[in-house]
Amino acid sequence: MRHRRGTVNFLFARKQTKLLPALPMPAQASSAGRETVTAELVSSLGWLDYREDDARKARELLRAFEEKGTLDSLGIGTVRDGLADLLFPGLSTLHTRARYLLLLPWLYGRLERDVRGGHVTRSRVVEVARKREADLMKALSAGGSDPVGIIGVQAGEKVRVLPREVYWSALRRYGLLLFTGSSRSYLEALAAKRPTMPRRTRTDDGELLEAVSDSAWRGDLPEAPDNWDTRSTFDLSAEEALYLSDRISASVPGTLFTELLQHRPVVEGAEMVWDLPDVERLSVETQRVVHHASMFSRAIYGAQILYNILLLERMAGDVTGGEAEHLTDAMSRVHAQQEWWLGAMEKDAHLLTAWDRPDFWEQLSAGGARIPGPTRLFVDRWLNAALDDPSVALSDQEMRRAVEAREWSLKGGLARIRNPRARERAEPPYGLVPLDYRWNGVARQLISDITSGLARSGVSA
Image 1 (cartoon, rainbow, N blue to C red):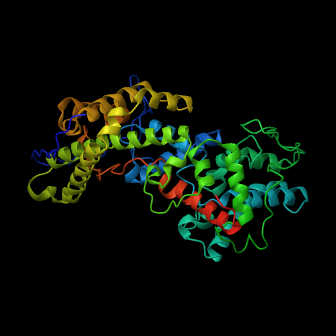
Image 2 (cartoon, rainbow, N blue to C red; image 1 turned 120 degrees about the horizontal axis):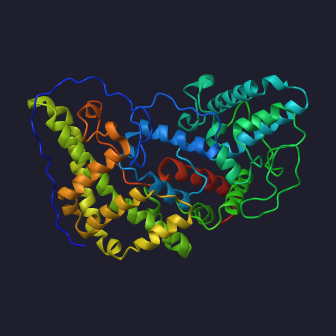
Image 3 (cartoon, one colour; image 1 turned 60 degrees about the vertical axis):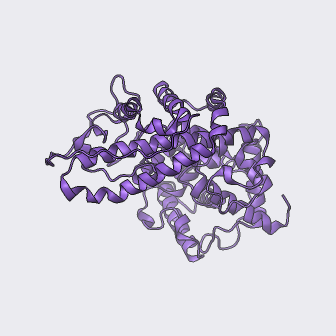
């Protein structure tokens, strides 16, 4: 890797601003020759039937549009999510606290008993389920839980996405939920009062589950504490934490998630997983995945910076005189990140030069990630340029055209760099945060929840 430190200056052209009509939404979601079209404006998302994993991914996509720091303008999400699934399988960016993995089984286990005991009529199953999840929000608030972690606390009973929809896939992945269908089909089966529900008899690892019964939930769940449904917290008891740790370890063995639960390092203050203390205690295979994740996060961040540089250059050219002043803050932030990235690339040059990129792609493939061909071509092209000379990669005209073309291939007429009407609604910077693979705000919090509970048990790591 060569190094020529320097700042890529923004080039500003001036021309008269012209008011244009609102940009229409595309008539269809994809077209020939385009890998994916990512809509900038989304009013609603619906489906007739779905797998729970598909619904979760759709909700994560919508959330990404609301969070500029995670917006995927260059279509690298499949690579990012593939690495996140290798590190923290089962987790979602929508998850908040670990105790939901027990609160929901307790809630729906009780609903099953009430339905079969005749206390809840068949026609009211969906209504009662929603009401009890709303009551759970109130119970967590009454118990003094951090409102940031309470799903739907602001919307209350009008919440659109319920906790069960957020955690359903994780509950099944970690073996707490034995039902094979979606949360919707679960409620339909419960309302039908079927004698038994479609259930798995073995886990993904081949573990033999208890005999098929009339419940969708494992029979060895920790017993719910008294009054948990009226006044509750996110604090796990020692028994609850040990149970979740064992379930996760049995369900996704050999992953960073499992190993962190076993070693229990101090996770607070670690902004990235590779910043954790005693990383050398991890297994060789886990260290390998962490290294790939670290190298990709470091190198691809330059492409995210370049995207913002190009967008701000075009936006500055759309206005006249002092009208570009509102872009000053965004420009300063991008310049600061550019300097940080160039310094980080220089600091890690020896690691990046030795990075085994064929193994990087092989690990993603082995983990089940489906990376579209155009995505891999774009990523490899950027990595080649960035690892050769980061500063040149930011200023190279061919690389700039590649970034512009990449956004156009994904968004078509909604691409901001190329379309002045799309830029009218732009509020850069976008994606100006290095990839952390669900660590900040999700994995770190859930691991902290469980390890704090384990500490109450007095069991050493």
